[in-house]
Image (cartoon, rainbow, N blue to C red):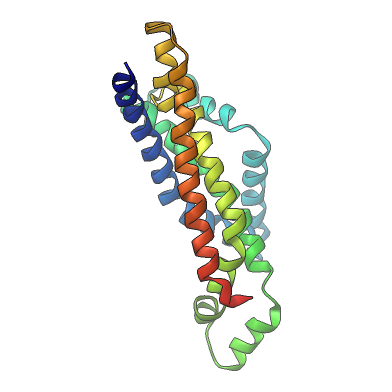
Length: 218
């Protein structure tokens, strides 16, 4: 039984890891783009983006999952996500990417705005362009400052992937809960916690190592 449960949980865990990894791949760069928009001097650009961030950060991810998955079909009368497991996974991925991109954007914005203005001015005195200043002077310092809050959000993402089960994405908790009905046992549900703890522990070690590598900015 233990072997059967482990195989089933591993299958669900692969979906969890896939959702986690793809969310980071798309949300990290999108968050940086959104942060630039939220700092734009033009109100016509800045205000709509700030409004979007406010909505996303102010409402539960669970609600966003339900709206993104069911909304197009109810409002537009068409299934934009496709059918089956792939469609549900795609809808969950879009919801997670939008949600975490908005959270990441605020972390980026805080890191960028925390750099003293004098460093920008020093780069201009040296004849550097704005792009060169950001890439050669600002970027690594921003990375150093955002690693701790970013690591917290990323570890939270590991646990938030479990919310995808609300639209029937077969992640690890769904796999563990299935044994309650099929075999009348609950310990596989507790077993899922081991996967989360190991995954989160590895990420914690990784981010701690990154912080040590960037320690020369102290």
